[in-house]
Amino acid sequence: MTKSEFLAQLGAALAALPADERDEAMRYYNDYFDESGLGEAEVVSRLGTPSEVADTILRDFYTGSEKSWNTKIPYENPSAGAAGASPAGAPSDDRSFRGTLRRIGAVMPAWAWILLAFVSIPVWGPILLSAVGVVFGTLCAVFGILLSLCFIVVALVGAGVAALASGLVTLFTSPPASLVIIGGGVLLIALGTLLSIPTIWLWSLVPKFFRYVFAQTRRAFSAGKGATA
Image (cartoon, rainbow, N blue to C red; front, side, top):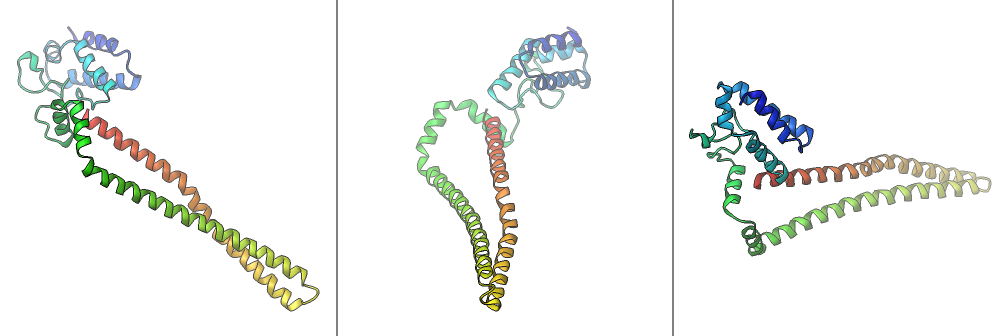
């Protein structure tokens, strides 16, 4: 089988994948042929059949696993009798944290993980509750400060408007006192207006903060899923 035939069959077998995932896989195996330094027939014998390669790619995609096929070029196919790891599988000497988790996951079934999590509740339960309490308390404190700033702004502006109205009412009966009251009202309104600027800016950061937390949480869970798959 030639390179073009292999890639054509592989592309047809990966038709169910999203276009970007399929293109990435096709680029990888095209580069594999070009960079392996081997003849096309020998590369095909080491990779296996297009359907076998497609099965690995589809399995990794639909299970959410890290792309085990996308490894350093070239790796030999163990089924061909050569030493080394196949490009359709992760290297056997992967001593990274993710590799360790994958090896543990390969020997521990799902029910064992569930049992381990249940037994270890006395360990991680209080830690989780403490973390949730700290986060919840911090959020309450932040929202309390923001609400306090809103109340202060409203109180300053309201008091300033009331003083201004009172000063205008007494303007003709007691001009000196009226001018003092009007000046105080204008000052209170100015202070409330100035304080409203940082208050509005701080409130505008709230949705951005929640979007950031959501994005980081989703990224953490996605990384954990790829690490343990």
